[in-house]
Image (cartoon, rainbow, N blue to C red; front, side):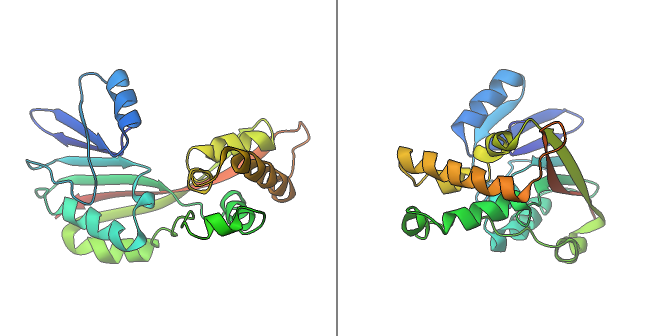
Length: 216
């Protein structure tokens, strides 16, 4: 799924999607040509009609911590009783893969440049915080974590795995040479925190947080 948010209405079965990335919208339209996709910003997005289902894949972690639950609650308030709100977010800022990004950023010639940019994500709210904030709007709020264990070819594959997500905010402010040097330093650090398996592969643990809530 390429889009950040899908909204669906029944019985018309009208499905629309939105994302803030033109590239993601282009890919989504190519994959699902019958779905109405549009560029948008979650902070200002407002559905024109009641929505029966909101589905979000890996987007709310990118919002500032103080805005996440406010945005979710505002969207829920547009739903009728029985409407469903479901999301999934990576919950991995405490994992070695992401701690290594922060440590690498603080060392080396890029430290001064990166100190002017907040590249690391804020941790996601706890299950308790999510439940307490949203339960007044909902009849049920179900929350759970799943830990995926991705078996990757080697440590370089871990870099490729995170390059377009968690690593991207660290690389974007850097010059081409700095990007290459940063990735090499990051790779070196990964080799110290992820053991290689007997066959040379690397197991990347990847926690994700899920929520399915029903509007009261």
